[in-house]
Image: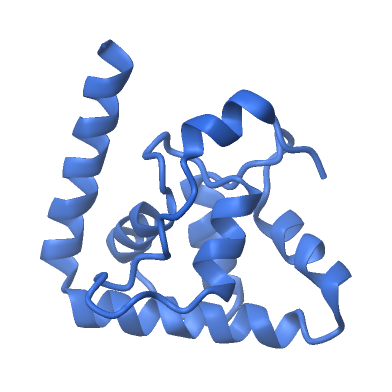
Length: 137
């Protein structure tokens, strides 16, 4: 139950940040990041894993700090607050990290209309993590 409460608190904080930063601004930033990563991935499927490794820590997840710094390295003009709010959109299970499937959904799938720019949440993160507790690259 404590983990559920923590995830709810994290989700609430992300929603507050999104409201403060503005939906349109975050939509624009998300699209800029998508386009920059897609450009770098133009070499094929292997480039997808390389792009993820740009972000990923040793445990195969992307943490906020890496997300923020790589967004800046890609040439996206993003503030720390905006990066945190955008990171919250991509962190489907609200555990503070983005794993590979969340990365794919966030950067390759267009956001559904009316979703606030969030990637499609068609995968249950907890089921994925039960089968694949750590994704390594």
